[in-house]
Image (cartoon, rainbow, N blue to C red; front, top):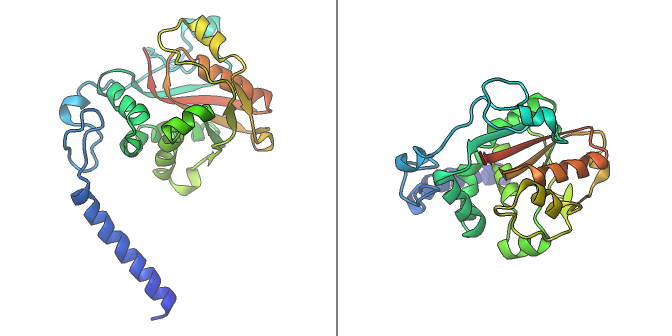
Length: 249
């Protein structure tokens, strides 16, 4: 056996051993309450009961809807993006999981939580998405947190798609140049004011003429996603769709 073949066989065997050891060394835990769960489960049975899967939704804002037509709000004041997707309603154990993931340093939660983004990315690809762009953090916040949680979620989501269906991940397509305070319970109008001109587009040559999927972890009023979408469109994007793991209802 050649050195190359031996190396390849050894690496493969090592990977199999590691896959078997990981569940023993680091047993799976609930993303919400940290209780032990079966391998492959994101939440324990109790926490999972608090999750609200979003079914039929308005294609303009991802709010629950009885059909696939635009809701009254989107007809009166449409968002600058075309098409919105969300997986779960914000609340319950999902809120706790996202807080632990974003502010508690539990970076490993990207693996279970990112799986909820996979069908959204796949749906956007079906509609023509060519590149996927995360909502960026301001450099100061990125240094403090150590990672952009949206990029971590997207890496997991993309890996679960067949290679030929994976859109290009453009991590630096947008930059956040204004360190806006936490939007918290601000009104929609105030949120829009706070994020105005907070983003700039990088890699314009990669954005121009492309159908872009813009992704955030939570969509609340849509102010941040709207400002990012406007920035991408001004940079030449042909179309912008948005997706979020959670939708505030």
